[in-house]
Amino acid sequence: MHRRTFLASSAASLLAAGPAFANRLSLNAISAYLNKIETAQSPFTQVNDNGTLATGTLYIRRPGRMRFEYDPPTDLLVMAGAGQVGIFDGKSNVGTAERYPLSRTPLNLILERNVDLARRNMVVGHEFDGTATIVTAQDPAHPEYGSIALKFTEGPVELRQWVIRDAQGATTTVILGHLAQGVPIPARLFDINREEKNRKG
Figure 1 (cartoon, one colour):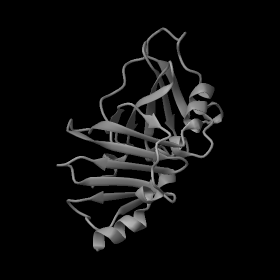
Figure 2 (cartoon, helix red, strand yellow):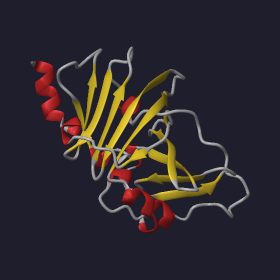
Figure 3 (cartoon, one colour):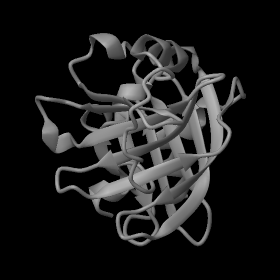
Figure 4 (cartoon, one colour):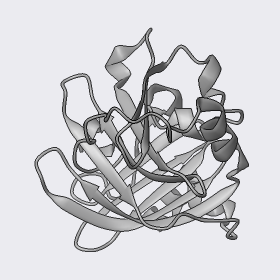
């Protein structure tokens, strides 16, 4: 599976920024919202760069853990845990995960223990499109890791979608349903080694 397909499931391009900044959420408010998330679960729709769609369920257990369970017929599972991202692609690596360091993916930004967007030189965009605040981040030392554009609405603050763009310009968009917080999510869902053992029988 191509790395950008993971980089992490996603959908259409973001709307162009509008002139109205009065309702733009501050970076501090967004950081506070992300830091309050301990566990969360949401249905998602992913739009790949080639226009194909996939659906599934997203699980988050901060810090450092995330899981994308895809619905059939998509035979794919993406897990983040213990500082790694593991991709189980039923078409190529059924029993063994293709692994990458989590720190080399844009999703690391929202999975950090202490998110402080206002003090990060990774934030390269902070816009309001008329309905939502869009924060775009990229590691200036490693642009090859790609960028992530996070879209938030207010009243209350909620993460709605993100778009990941790789170094070649390909995008993957993840559109979230309601992000239910505080739900019990077992740690085993993020254990890449355990998943490998289970798949090998």
